Image 1 (cartoon, rainbow, N blue to C red):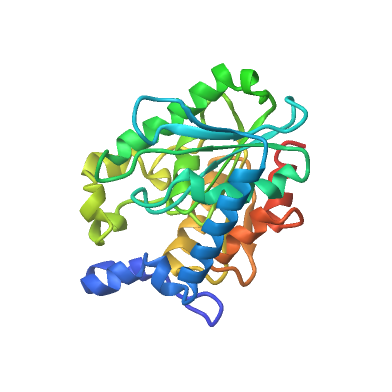
Image 2: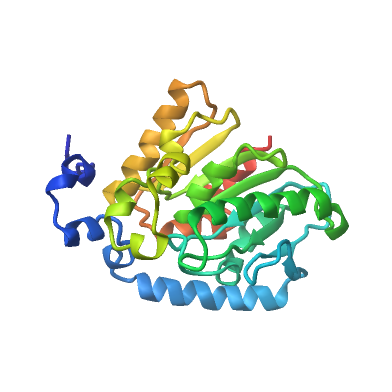
Amino acid sequence: MATKDRPSDPRLNWAALSQAERDAAYDNNAAVKNSAALIAERNQMSETLRASRKSFLDVPYGDRERTKVDLYPAADKTAPCLVFLHGGYWQRNSREVFAMLVEGVAAHGWSVAIPGYSLAPDVSLTDIVAEISQSLDWLAKNGEAHDISGPVVLSGWSAGAHLVAMALDHPRVAAGLAISGVYDLGPIRDTGLNNALKLTSAEVAALSPLRLPAVHKRLDIAYGTAELPALVFDSIKLHEMRIAAGGPGKLFPIEGADHFSILAELRRPDGALVDIARKLVL
């Protein structure tokens, strides 16, 4: 039921919506009025950090152009490592423009790894999900040689949160933190986002976390209370489904945060998401 603080899920009446209304249900850039300024600030901060911090940059983990990873090892190679997966609806952005997130957990002695991945329409979502597993395979085999051997917390934002849920069962992953994600691909196929994704019915079934058995590893799920309702309800539903199936993890509504401002909580050393991530390996 819709309330002042909790609008109704637009997908409850999905068949009756116009194409424009369906597109708007997932258009985070339009929903956040200052999104362009926030994105520009993020990119600038990331460029500065990437140039200034001890790192191994552009390390290939696969054969495609974007299958590279940036590694920011801590002084202690056995420290926990945050592996962060970027967003952009599987068709935009790159690992480089999220480097600014390193400083949050690094201030607490953590390592960080940021894998890139190929984008639609150059590859399918099936390929993208496989690349994330490939990056974790590479980290399991080569992390120690790059001074990263501690427990891995797999985190991601937006489309990256979906990829976290899909890769949670990887042996190298100790726990997950999914931020502002989309966990059912069915409605996505009815929006303009599908022009690049070209989702098949088989992919919707096989790659929607809300349609799959719960992975029995700790997965904390976070979202901003000022996010689009579709993302809010996907987060709540995934948490409820996992709890019903005995999957461990907590749900964290970040009060007042929108789809872009929520990232500040992972960038700041005292941010709420930094605190949540750190508790995943206690």
